[in-house]
Image 1: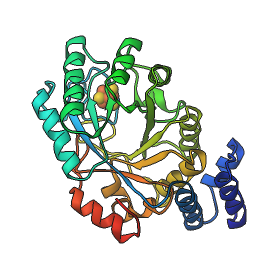
Image 2 (image 1 turned 120 degrees about the vertical axis):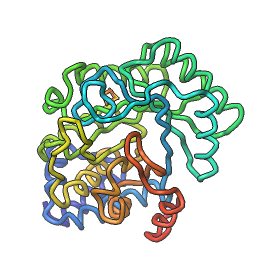
Image 3 (image 1 turned 90 degrees about the vertical axis):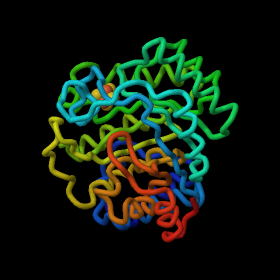
Length: 322
Ligand code: SF4
């Protein structure tokens, strides 16, 4: 697809229209990736303005997860040399929320490594969310695995804004990435969260050996659930996991993918998440001018990141606002 056609689709999207599957396929394979990114950036600025959303994560319960996701250093099935696995004390979760607010983060996401929340731990997470609501004042999102309807309604009642549950990869790739649960289990959790009135954040990881066609497949499925937020990670191969030796994506593939998400989910927050420091030019600055409009700062679940002040400076340098 040439620049004129890409621009025509960008104009359609800004005007409230959408792109279909055939057009999405042409977009991700556009002749000129720079042109594609410029059009995705134009859509972002027209619809959402110059602001970059900054989020901090709190890994409130690390490691020893029962699931076998091949990219994940927190699975109990792989010898990754990590040990800690109790749920963090409420006081620590609340204190981290306070620090995130002081760093200038607009949201704080509580993430736990388990298949689903054990009832007693779920109660403790709820206590922490209520305490953050009373004493900190920052938007709280959660990523706690599979949820029952009652748990989803409880989170909504506590003021949780969005529930994160990633599809991880394309449906056609999923059985290679995880065998302990299914892609449909993940889709069902997104429905449960939506039915409870929670906003949805979903996405996955690119660079796990999937094809470009499979990146398109995942993007179309993500768009089909109309998420408020899309979160895309680039694989950071973790020692001890089956993907430890995975080769990186070819140049430009991540950039094409972020641009495509902007065309498919024009009003969503599109967050460039784990792996940006390692895989993207300018630690993600390139894709913040190519469709993405959000970052995670101050580190990830199992890998370090950049300091909030460094990221704020990067955002200013490329003419955007943190
Ligand atoms: S990705 Fe989530 S469900 Fe899968 S092993 Fe890691 S923590 Fe468990």
